[in-house]
Image (cartoon, rainbow, N blue to C red):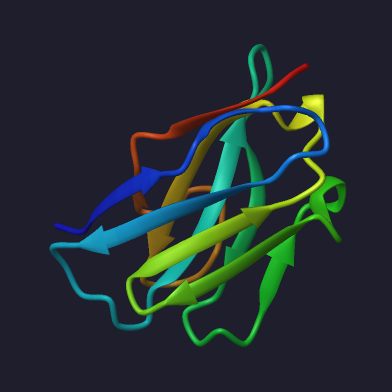
Amino acid sequence: QLQLVESGGGWVQPGGSLTLSCVASGGSLDYLAMGWFRQAPGKERETVSCLTSMGDATYYTDSVKGRFTISRDNGTVYLQMNSLQVDDTAVYYCAADHLTCYDGMNYWGAGTLVTVSS
């Protein structure tokens, strides 16, 4: 069973940067789409960014375009977050699937909290 472990969350002031990491282990890493989702207090979970299994397509939600960058190195996926805003405060979840990027991906991490405040 594939397991995902996130790290890198924390507190940062508006305008600051954080890099989240997610390590996949315990299962096949072949043809694995990996992505990041987030859920802010009182809001529904949303897709932040996702990288398809072949790396041929990348998705970013509009609010993070130009500020966040997703990348992958084998079984580890990263989310570089720059120019963070208060509205980026949320629990960030790593997810993976052997098919594609979508809201119901098969494997999920426990989440890491990102707090942006002054």
